[in-house]
Length: 160
Image 1: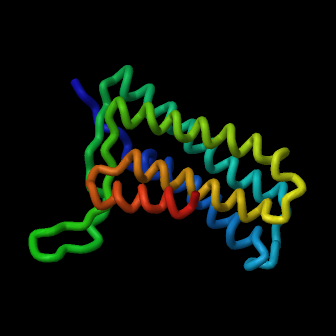
Image 2 (image 1 turned 180 degrees about the vertical axis):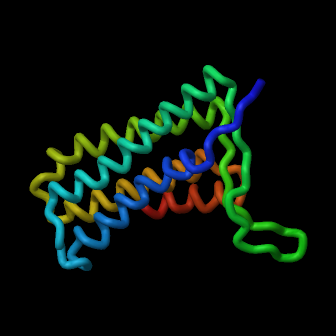
């Protein structure tokens, strides 16, 4: 018997890196007046990606062990005639594995970057961008429709 996954948990996976990115971008860059230091910036973004990784591993475990699946529309943002523009997630075995891969690699890059970028002036901005890249990749991987997949793909290209 196939179970469904918790929508709220799956929503946290891409939103955690997005929140870390927004906080680092708003409060950690020159535009925001650099109110938080480098340590707080990388801690916020790493915490967001770490949370996404842990939830992705739990999702993969649920998919593998319990056969859990999900294909839901979370939000319909526009209807033009018969065309519905929606935001939704589809999670199956491949998606769950890719969520783990994306969040794990991103987590390792975040940790490595602490030392690699330590002397760079754009330290906080870089962490904001790389966390936004993680959000974009997760939206691309988890999308259940072509429009969302396209926006995720374009966001990955834009941020990189």
